[in-house]
Picture: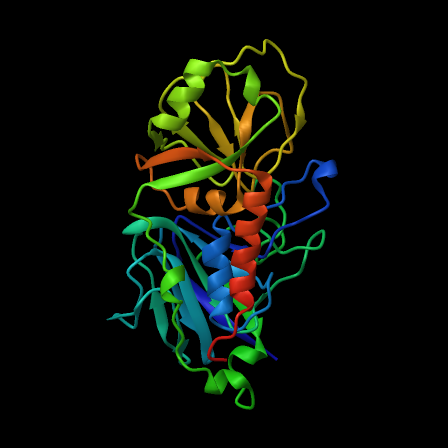
Length: 320
């Protein structure tokens, strides 16, 4: 037995995302997955969901959903002034909708992306092992064809979310630990592991890059985020295209970096300054156009330690 949420208003871009499509880049297919891995992970954590459970990624806001059955949900990430039947709802916590209740999200006040999880996870047919929606590849999502949500669509969720005989009926309202609460208005420092072509950028431009702020360019999406700031000069005249990873900092001839996110292409031929850590990518994904960021340097070991600490925090017990 499944429950349903009906989409009343989809907002500009709302998609279903699990942990992403892995092992397929040799086919030229993007990984997809949540742009902000942390907010997505915490939304599932609030409900006791397993890592990888599909949740909605809501970009900018404007989403309205109606519950067709009682269900238990959690909302994390950007503050979109959530309301239930017109009554304000706190962000970064779990909550329950009764049948007929409407969840309304306004436009993002701070941050860019919110994540809505349901107890047990949303249900969709996997494509190449994942339900992650990649619109450019026309893969995944709630319909399996890379579609974003549209008015009148329905989202299926597991019976766990509303079964009268399951824990969902006894789930208390949970909130994020204080240490996990996001601070999206603050200037972000994005930690980067230097790449193989790092030494080919001239010294002056490297000093500028790590000592002056950058601004997020409005021309940004799930494929990549452009930065505006000091000009980076590279001495490489030509480069054979090579595989691209999440967070790759590509520098085109204009010297303004493009940081590649989840829906990036699989290869590229611009020199790379380095690679942002997964958590730095998550933070960048919440930066609004014009927001200031800084670049910092870290080692691969430091990045791994930071990521493992994040995953370990999600395994810590909470009130469930």
